[in-house]
Amino acid sequence: MDKQPHRFAGPPGQEDMPYLLTPGPLTTSRGVKAAMLADWGSRDVEFRRVVSGIRKGLLDLAGCDDSYECVIMQGSGTFAIEAALGAFCPKSESRTLVVANGAYGDRAAAILGKLGRPVVKIDKGDSAAPSVEDVTRALDADPAISHVWIIHCETTSGIVNPIEEIARAVKARGKVYMVDAMSSFGAIPVHMGVGMDVMVSSSNKCIEGVPGFSYVLVKRDMLEASKGMSHSVVLDLFEQWKGLEANGQFRFTPPTHALVAFHTAMKEHAAEGGVAARGARYQRNAQILIRGMRDMGFSTLLSDNQAGPIIQTFLTPRDKNFHFETFYEELRRRGFAIYPGKLTKRPSFRIGTIGKVDEAVMNGVLKAIREVLANMKVTDLAPLEG
Ligand SMILES: *Cc1c(COP(=O)(O)O)cnc(C)c1O
Image (cartoon, rainbow, N blue to C red; front, side, top):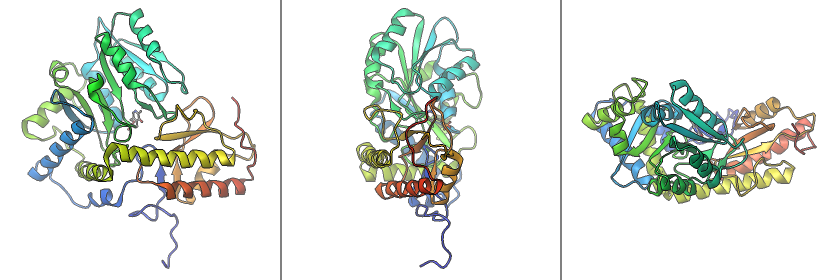
């Protein structure tokens, strides 16, 4: 037994810190953390081998044939989103349709607005998925739309959008199809071949790496045609690609530790059984969490056929003793950091079911929630309206 009691019951490698039940940064394996215990030179041959291994591995994972390229961009997921929007979305004449059903769709539309790129938006609120008809109606009504941007798993609520069905309708009309698969890639199958021209994701989601970079998978001909399109020097996807192709190096200092950790995370992903096994583990996490929360009396924002395995949204209980801040702090004290803010319009809170977490962790957070509710004297878990 340890003489000094841990403050938290945290994950291996950080026993004194909580599990992160958030959609990134998330809990990583001990192996991923250990991979960062060395300093790599960004121009050394070993490091360049890691970078090229990551680029190739990501293309394979997305089922890309050799007409696609992978460009890695420093920064969080939004950096690759802004880089991709700036590289590919038209500046005039034609415009981009953003299919939004949550904060990340709204953000993509806001970035296009800031860049001065013509944009129209379908807004489905934050608890409904767009249908094929929603998209085809918008496309058929406005022939000036040339590009479509959509989110795979809208992490605002956790809803999973039907990107493959919509891909077929978009490609049938000859439009460019771009997908933010940030929070799904690695756990929900993504096949670029169904008609995806561009896909964006980042290091700290379902591959279970640490934050530091994001990446764009894109048709090579689109990348070649994007020369000079970017509004930015650092976010210029074409120039970033040229740099990586010329000598395997980044133009500007790369997050070496995050890249090496991600390389290990990709090997662990494959060893677990790839996308299918990772998705199945997250699905089990989600089922255990949702069942346990419903047993206590909580309601979910989404119905079971809408909710994906990534993050679960629970409606805030109406009991006047329920204070989210206390709830959050008390759970954290017990070793579980849930998502500390709400993004949906209805009062709600979210618990992530991704990262290096399993049934035992889910049962642990459920037990902690029961304790905290009892201490807070919360008994009425029917949802707060409004
Ligand atoms: C995490 C995430 C992003 C990127 O957010 P960052 O904070 O920039 O990493 C974008 N879209 C979705 C759907 C996400 O889940």
